[in-house]
Amino acid sequence: MPVNLPYALTAELTHRCPLHCPYCSNPIELQKKESELSTDTWLSVLEQAGELGVLQVHFTGGEPLLRPDLELLVRHARELGLYVNLITSGVGLTDRRARQLAEAGIDSIQLSVQASSSELADSIAGFSAHELKRQAAQRIRDNGLPLHMNVVLHRTNLHQIEEIIELCVSWGAERLELANAQYYGWALRNIDQLLPRQDQLHEAEAAYMRAQRRFGHQIELLWILPDYYEDFPKPCMGGWGQLSLTVAPDGRVLPCTVSSEIRTLSFENVKERELAWIWRDSPSFNAYRGYEWMAEPCRNCERRELDYGGCRCQAFLLTGDARSADPVCVRSPHRGIIADRIGTIANENAGWPLYSYRGR
Ligand code: SF4
Ligand code: FES
Image (cartoon, rainbow, N blue to C red; front, side, top):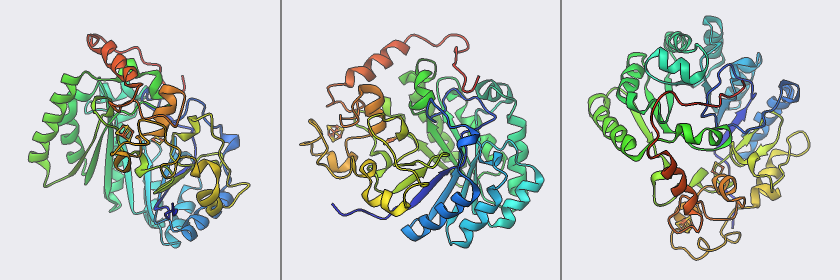
């Protein structure tokens, strides 16, 4: 099977973060500051990505503003002709840094929010961040930059969905991702506290449709499906090693941000190998390309070209075998794992959830 060119690079500059979100999808084991790539190595990664055909770079973390070289990296990526997006909590986006990012040519900033009220938002983040985010949104707009926002939706904030959309409109957002939580990394630890009931999801989806009619002309709304309640899995990442690559803070190159959790694979590092070789030839990127690796029921399923067997990371995290069908699939012999999870939360909804907060 021919190997496509990657379209996007996710550059995880750091795993350090001031927030403690229970739904964090970063791996359980975070990279420490001492193991982060140097500025020079990141500059080289950007050049190699541009040569490989990458068109977009998303600087993310953790909180990428904790890296003092962020503006330099943004400038370099723009000089290479890449579209540059920053994914941030907004904490640390001072007037000076917002101005410097604009001067460096950044194309867009995606700001996260946890809820519509500061009380709920700060309780979810485990940090008083909501007011800082409002200020960050203002600074992004004041510097003439497009403001994109995202919220991770789960049992505790789903009822606020219309208010969250109103808030983002009032802050001047052009685009809002309503991302139902995905249960990877740290989030999987908190799944019993995060997973909503199906009736909550139905109400939230109806509220999203109402908001679409009210605000659709002012803001682009994207509803990211909660896959546990689907019959078939999502075509995760558009297929393994097909569209994008992630460079982790320590330089490991991953087919997606969660894949370091797949313990049966080992990943090459930009400190030792060229990015182009890793993309085209490394065992980790080739592990689940095409269809040969598939086991039944995916191997002979007519949907395999639509969903590629779902998500490799979810398959590994729930079954211990990344080659198995994503357990979300009703044809998977492991579907019972999802059904059990949903079953356990059916009657739980009282009181503040006992989260395991990230980094505490
Ligand atoms: Fe997709 Fe595999 Fe399920 Fe078929 S059996 S729908 S390919 S996950
Ligand atoms: Fe890694 Fe789906 S999140 S393949």
